[in-house]
Length: 353
Image (cartoon, rainbow, N blue to C red; front, side):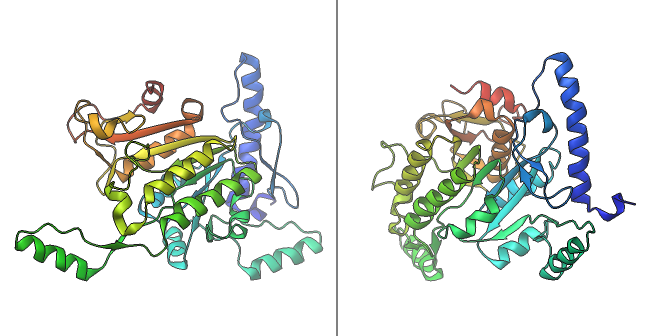
């Protein structure tokens, strides 16, 4: 009868706790460490209420809580989907900028939590001494330029994945002008623009996320940035910096430097050109310090990588934190059929120099 009064989310947490207690005893008997060093557990108003710090031995089998920002973007959405499919390891929350983004996440089955009516009903039940289970939100609408909107989404998170970025856009008339120029044999660079400039998104917005994450005790931040941020490549002549006059690589580099100074474990991923093609079909190639921009051919690779493969790399970075702790890594891929499809991420990360 009690089980019927609990939501599926609560039942999963209870099962995880019971398994954790049994698992901790088993690990202890053979001298092994628990799988996850998480520090948060359910307790408080209900059996599965808010999370709190506890000892690692009580947390065996409890999923890491992860917030993905930019979760409705093309790469962010892929990361969100992948983590939702790994509920034994992760409880994922997504931060989006608009109602349309929230609706996109809802199509995955993710929830915004209880409605105001249900919250009010639960409050009445508790006053009567009856159990009432609140559903944890998985979707948040917020603004990375407003720290206050980041507070609740980051509550009790173990990990933060930053996938927010300035997005250069192209007006239709610019496409027409560029095509006409090509027809008459002239080279013309189309004029791009940003709705919100990279200084705001890639520097101030990113800094806000890092600051709130640090305040909330987040243990691991994965930042997806871009290749080309090293001083040798990050010049005014770089095409990415020219787009819309945004100097996007300048602001991304500044955010990376800030993250590395904060004393929070981090992993910074620099993907090559992003492809909207299927993942899991190519060999991934890792490098550092933008070396792949010049020697990708020597490594048998291209300068690009499918978004889905970047998303998988993010997920695996969360799983193999110890191998990628406080590291910057560049990633591109080989063509389909060239090389061996990457499926052993432990080896991939272990081989990173």
